[in-house]
Image 1: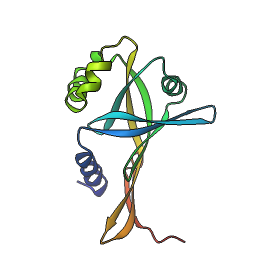
Image 2: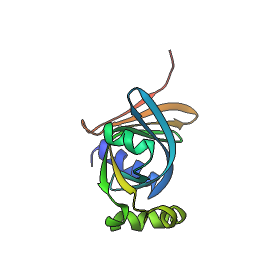
Image 3: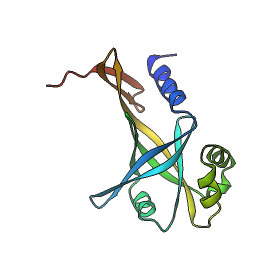
Image 4: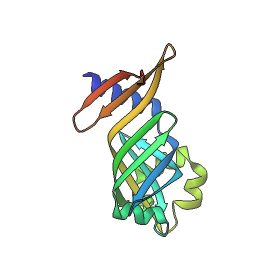
Length: 151
């Protein structure tokens, strides 16, 4: 495997099946962020939300989103898939990782499932106390690791 694929799959393995992440959306120059329960499967990230929420309207009108947790930042394209219960692979993972949220929300009629396909990932890592910035460009299939030295 090439370095990009090795690093990408290593990062996904570290991420695991599901995490709480911040989802940032925007519309008409107004950016909003909130904590979300995120599932990852084969390099695509998934979450559910209610059609009546502001974030839903932002997502429908602007497919560009960002996800963030700890030192990891992900930029991606988001798309609506349908009702969460219509996607058994999602519901199995979501129920496993976030059982309370699954029980409370997944069966509600206004819930919708979204996928986020990343196009750029960046994270800060430290080697021997030295900071590095790791980047992954999915479109170009490029991986870079830069030591951060400031100005």
